[in-house]
Amino acid sequence: MEMINEEMRDAVDTGIVGSTLKQISKYLDLKNLLRGTSIWETFRGQQPDGGPGSVLFCSTCNVGINQIIHSIQNGTDPEDIVVMMTNLCVDLELGNFIFCDSFLHIAEPQLFWIIENTENLDGKDACGMLFPGFGCNTDNPARVWEVTMPNTTKPPITRPPLPEPGSPTMKVLHLADTHYDPYYKVGSNAVCPEKYHCCREESGPLEVPEAAAGQWGDYRNCDAPRWLLEALYEDINTRHPDIDFIIWTGDIVPHNIWNTSREGNLLIIRDAVQMIQDYFPDTPVFPALGNHESHPVNAFPQPYIDNEFDISWLYDEITTLWEQWLPAEVASTILYSAYYSTLIKPGLRILSINTNYCYSLNWWLIYDDVDPASELEWMAQELQKAEDAGEMVYLISHHPPGHDDCSKTWSHQYNRIILRYEATIAGLFYGHTHKDHFMMVYDENDRPALVGYVAQSQTPYHNLNPGYKIYTIDGDYQGSTYQVLDNDNYIMDLDEANFNNNSSFFLLYSAKEAFGLNNLTPSSWSGLVDIMKEPNSTVFDQFFRYYTKDGRPYREEGCDESCKSNLLCRLVVSDTSNTTRCDQFN
Image (cartoon, rainbow, N blue to C red; front, side, top):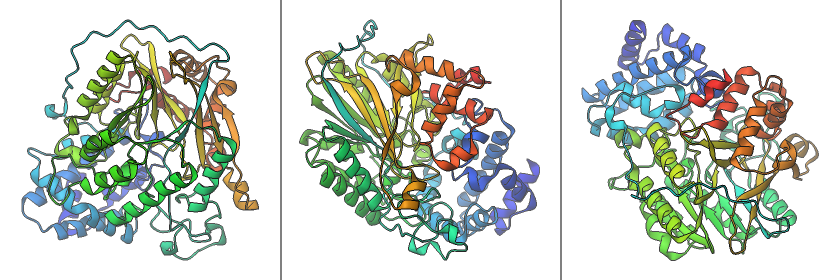
């Protein structure tokens, strides 16, 4: 650590990266780690705080950010710090000069404002807030807080009965992580020097023919072209003309995080919303906001921030765009902080939660993470109103609260609330991971209380086939439980589509049939985890295939024991402040 501290100080002063830092970067595989390629296998899952890689990453982060804070407090010119950080980024092979320089110039004004205006900030606190998923922790007591809940007694828990055979059902489409790229170019470079997002005109020349971007998308770091999304929506319309409503859980903007802009993001959001309107003109849509919608990416200031970083440019726009689907009375909360509550059927309410206030890579949480926008308090109050009215509720949002990048206190408070109101909650629906899986919620007695569904992405980014999820749901009739009865999952085989120029989708699996489940109750899903954790479980092998949407790169890579234990851990954690349930997979 003494060597790291000395080299980091020299790097901040001179912009020159020493040999120790380069060795650390190579050991941690930072260029892939920060891209999300090796995170779960290396750091996350069952031992988020215990591995040597985690200790090394967090220690280096603490030292580096301390040096940056010290330089800012000593009056170093921000431009000089950006130049230094750009050199560091390039020398550590986190990205090329275009990526590093452009992104840091986009991020610098907000980051420097936060550092200058956050009291008693140090490297450990900042790293603990930004990178909890890498095992970093903060010991700042102000980071632990509690939401005030309605003072009512939790009713006795009785599992709702399964509907009688032949009872009416509804069909619900779940779209997630669309990541629409209007500038995708067929035949462009899919392995560009920027690494994080390619397949555009500016992605540079091809070094080998195999680097050319495919007609219908690409397994490499490329997002969804318009014609891919149109083919997907057309398939839904043809195959499922009887959809009752759509849940759309965010991340519309592509992954070109180093060259976004406010107006550029808004143009893409408008275009993507118009596509949904064109293909589903008579279908209600209930959206939630993703972390890529903002500029810079992930940056969602608190609603009281009214300086040049005010987020109203985004919230004003989505309020206008969403008004075609939502009643006028929800506009005030969307304008305030992009969340809302609305009754969509007699006895069924949707709460759309802005989980960018839990997302650790939202650096505004360093400045103030205490229930931003009082959203969780509002959520508890809305659930209490629903309980009083005898309504069932769907909670929809972009980030699953058990995802390792959801800040620990926010995640814990969210879980407190949903466990208190589990009798009122009929469904939990998320996105963000691009994979197809579920998230168990257990109570303090280890009872499976709820299950959340995480929908697969429409984008193939990265190593995935494009897909979508259809739920069969109890209802619409008086006394319906509105519980999920089954889900069907459709994909396009990207290799086949690009080879034959054929944009067809097909049913990959139906949950009950594929896993031999009698029903989709929390107990059934929890029992599936017990089956999959057994050594050499063929059921797990099948689940991994579906989890990765049968993407060829994942199929070729496979899932070893470390991968398996980490993936199973992902399924049983809904509260990032407590990962002890993962100990069973050691």
